[in-house]
Length: 141
Figure 1 (spheres, rainbow, N blue to C red):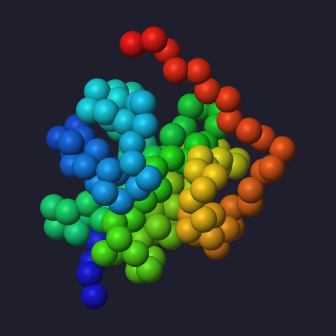
Figure 2 (figure 1 turned 90 degrees about the horizontal axis):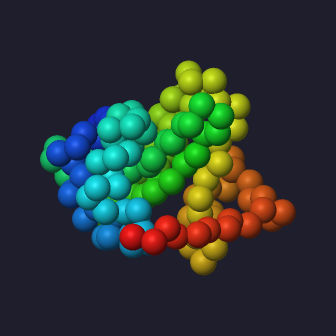
């Protein structure tokens, strides 16, 4: 059995995290770059939780807290580590973080076409809110 440890990411993890997301998540988006990850860690050093096996990232979740909302992003587990309870452990750590900070509900960003993720979120007790849609506006670089 593989043992993983949960820990907060540090700036030195940023490149490995991006590589992990490209391989294990649904790719990366506009803010998923080296500067973006480092800004996240500078602003909220406990937000990016990693499951690690030695020096290898096995899973991740961003547990973002802005003082009002608890938001979950980038829940991902490397394909070779799936079905071992890692996402459950990551979500438990995120939820404990939110509760300690005063959060009352967590919101998760989940891609519409990611059916596997829908099942995982549902199994973790999260419910889809069909009355909401995400609106975005990228800023000019």
